[in-house]
Picture 1 (cartoon, rainbow, N blue to C red):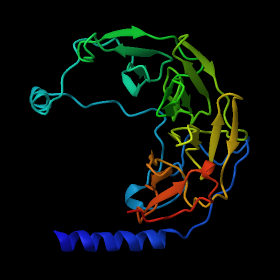
Picture 2 (cartoon, rainbow, N blue to C red):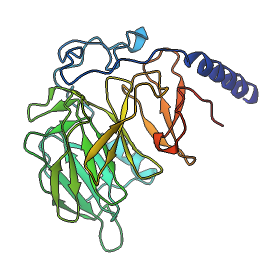
Picture 3 (cartoon, helix red, strand yellow):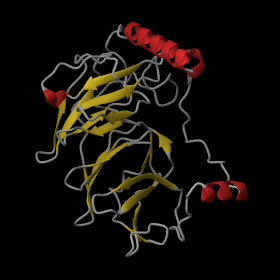
Picture 4 (cartoon, rainbow, N blue to C red):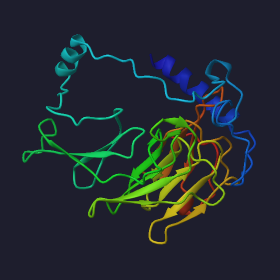
Length: 288
């Protein structure tokens, strides 16, 4: 097992070194037509690997066919999971649960503008908590598969959506909204300048407390200034060599952001130092 782990680490390191080569994509304009909503490759536009190639983004999300069986419930209970005693009447289904700073959980009813809040009971038990309906998002915004985060001040920001609207149509929208939990209100948020699409973008709250958003289809990002309501674009040209498509971003204790590139055939892992640190981001770096 030790020999296997060592060998695997060596291969991973070699792939990371090889993976540092590449060319940054171009910055689109607000009128960019290179992203087709009917037929295209993976969001990043990368035509490989073949075994991960998605020749078309479905015009509608696939139906949910997963069924929870009695056997699954038994296994979940044995592992410590508890079923919530009651749930709201969702139109389409729950999506993108977020834990707020006050301990409550909010959940979107996907492809609608509706959100619900789960408040734990007086003992802090969510299984027997109560649900309440929140204010609705702007009427033209009903996303599915989007970027979101809870900001340090307790507000919630949502950007983009691979699908949008009550018909759940694939549009890679650039709409956005911010939620004020203290007044139960949503306010529209404009996209970064020139971003015609955000889609199922990436997001992370940096160590500085700044929210960073990634465009689904290119290799650039933007930082949000909540006070001013403005964006500062940080790429391309910041060292990140691959498109953001389908990535997960995780903030590390040292302030770096761990990124896993799912579009490259070598499946390399990268870390990008956050732009507020004053350091030039690098495209690939092996961490301990």
